[in-house]
Image 1 (cartoon, rainbow, N blue to C red):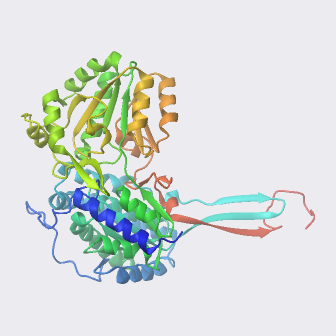
Image 2 (cartoon, rainbow, N blue to C red):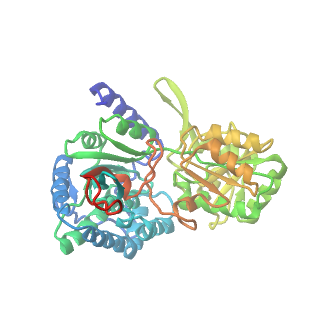
Image 3 (tube, helix red, strand yellow):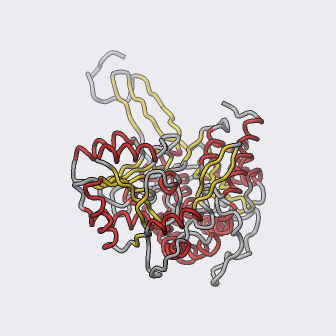
Length: 497
């Protein structure tokens, strides 16, 4: 249904409010342009060339021209173009990852680099494209998967260039082009990465602007992108407000929304293995991943032993007093539409465990990756998607209580959940109860994306709209070609026509 003007204005107002409050991906709005340590994004970007544009209309039209040119090329050409993007992401991951860290100042430097390399290696490409054939007495029907055209994309500050890289590979593999409205706090690295991709593709394959980016993104440019006539499909990776805006824009939308992934540990778990997995998943890029472990529910029988395992594995436990001190500064209450709600303070989003410990009044080793502490279920760290390397542990009566609490505090996002258990029935029951897009058993959260697990990776995990971990097929539409009474070669010779 086409959004009304009042609806659009209402959503934009809400997004503006959440920007000012530091909500989720729309959090770090005041850290642009302060690159340091010699990794600053170059000022040589030229508007209107190699995908960098000052306005949505020019970008969309350029992407449309590029789409028409791409449509004349073969699937093998697409594969070669994607391989060029992969090589840039892999070979230049250190330089580009450092640029992203210096601009956004959230997360961990080594993981910014690693994310680009992993996306270059593992994002699905043209090999995921497939056709279906139906053959019977009345001939042949072939279902092929065609591109939509120009896709409008919104990307978050948490993974600015990584999200663009993964989306570009999948969308181009499907035959589309794209226009990106990046988060303002990641706009410089977004533009620099897009420029490098397009410069290489233009030089080697003669098509410029396959990937376009708005160099000064705003909420207004996002709204214009949603409604531009050249945009055939919307892909959003971000918080709840921008997700709602996309789903109400009157076009098909693929939406990767918020999550608050819970972990359950039962009495049969290998506790040392569970502790290592929780630390690795929750500390990755300082807990910025939307799939990362945010809160842990442990059955009472092994609760104390689980905390011991966490300490053995290298995490640092905060005392009750220290947990209270951290909660007081890292979670804040805001007013919205006359109602008070709690959100993560942008001051601590994606910051190192050392900084969080200092705020709690504790000194820890610089090598500390994760803090944890015992809380009750009412501590806001349990209910708020905090995106910082502190994980609350909640004592539960039994497995039924733990699964019920996990269900409650996942908030029905149906995003990601994890269990550590050697009881098949407990694992099965939790998987059915949670109904999440990603469900991980006995591993860190990122294993659900094929990192130390099986499968493939994408940073656009479409939970509200149901597509799941996106692939090139996600960005296609079905086309059916039917040939009546011919081309089926199995059947009676000389049969009736």
